[in-house]
Amino acid sequence: MAVDIYVRYEGGLHCASRHAPSGAVLATDAPADNHGRGEAFSPTDLTATSLGTCMLTTMGILANKRSWNIAGLDAHVIKEMTSSPPRKIERLRVTIDAPAALASKLTAEARAELEEAAHTCPVRLSLHPQLEVVVGFRWG
Image 1 (cartoon, rainbow, N blue to C red):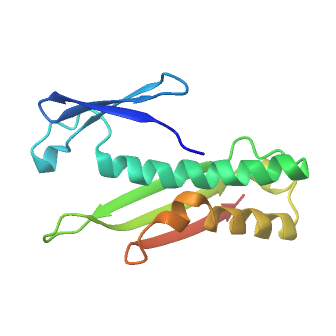
Image 2: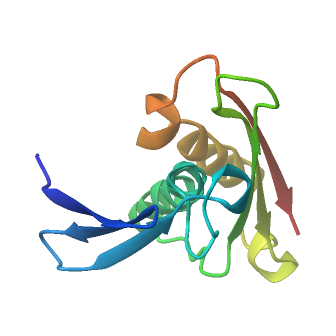
């Protein structure tokens, strides 16, 4: 399935992207440490965001299939950039947190299935192997 996304450069290192199917618009700006003002997500911030949201979404798809309620699951993603050229993402650290009330309703097997779903989400599988991705889970 193909999805059209239209991106327009607005000047001042700002872009506006439109998701054709929904019409949703997303703004980006260069980060303050790379000639921008940091007024919106940077393109590399979107990579980190994509990973976190993809992991939770893929876990949610599995949870729906199994009739598990995982509402309230959180992901915290820390993006670390290289300190020397070329500028790129060096490491993404992801922590997925389940509140105790949610975690107590999931068996060890369910947790293992959810963790596998997170590790095999489409964004994670699409990232370059040189990009270090560190993932941790806190179950309650």
